[in-house]
Image 1 (cartoon, rainbow, N blue to C red):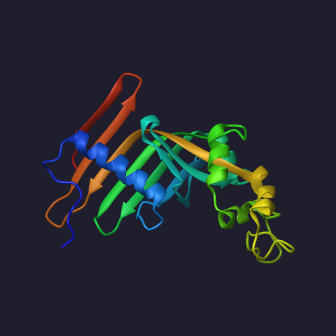
Image 2 (image 1 turned 30 degrees about the horizontal axis):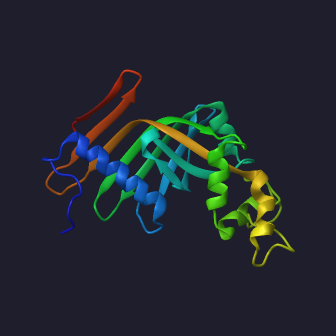
Length: 205
C-alpha cells in the first residue's frame, strides 16, 4: 500500500510547507507528478483548460510560473481576466492540489522573463519559432514547430529568434485546497492569503 503524504496528525503549517516543497520539486524534476498541471483561464465567461509545464516556483512570493507563446489566446485571456486556477494530481500518493490566484503575462523586459528564457533548453525553444500563432486556422495539419531551414537540430544562436514570442505566466497564489484521498477516509486542508494575513485549516472533504 502506498503511504499517504498527509495524515490527520500533521499540523496545517506542516502541510503547507510540504505542498510548497512538492511544487518546487515539480518545477525542477520532469518525473515529478506535479511537473505538469491543468491551468484554467477565463474567456467570455467560460473556463478554458489546458495542460502546462510548471517551470518555476518562488515560495517566498507565492509565485507559480509556466511558459507560453506571447501570440497565444491564453496570453490574451490572462490579459483580459487575471483569475487563474491550477490543478495538480499525484496518482501514486492520491494527492490533489488546487491553486487559485491572480496571474499576469510578464512584460518582455521583466527580469524573470529573461531568466526563464536563458534557463530554457534549445529543444524547448523550438515551438517559439513556429511561423503561425497558436490557434491559427490551417488548411493542412501544422506541427507547431519551425519550418525549413530550421527543421533539424537548432543551435542556441538560432533559437534566439524565438525570444520575441516567448512569455512567462506568473500566478500569485491566494488559495490552496489540498486533498489527500484514502480508502479509509480523505483529508482536506485549505490555505488562504489575504491582505490581513494567512490562514490554514482543515475542512470537510
